[in-house]
Image (cartoon, rainbow, N blue to C red; front, side, top):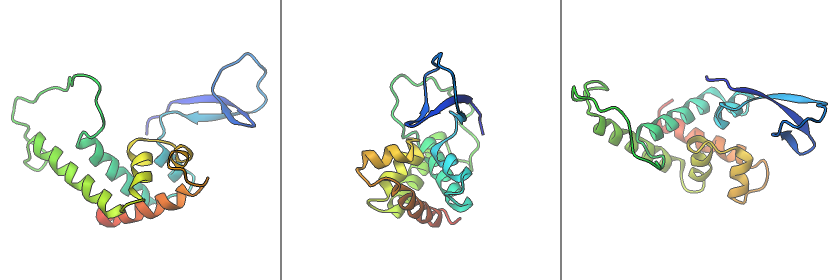
Length: 157
């Protein structure tokens, strides 16, 4: 896992982002490259099966290229016909990943797929997802766990 560590001052409101000249009283080291899913797993809020299911879902999301793009794609084009990946062409691999992603989201079900997509695919923090979905604080952890259990069943983990 990539590590991008920074020191942040801890205040009543939480970690302070600015690097003011004020004397620091208490600080915390934050890994900016850590995903919300990785953060929850590292602190024991998700078990290994749930974490693996989330990582599989994110992998399918990325392989299906579902994230919005804002510019021209500059990916290298393979000239050899794209051999590899179980004998599938790149387009076929992308379609297969999209089908797996759609199936996993269907398996999670309505109401659960919202928080699943926000935290796993969009890498939104759990408190931010709860606020956006207008849920009570600290309710997302339970809902995300249920959704990841369903996704783990879909992926047969």
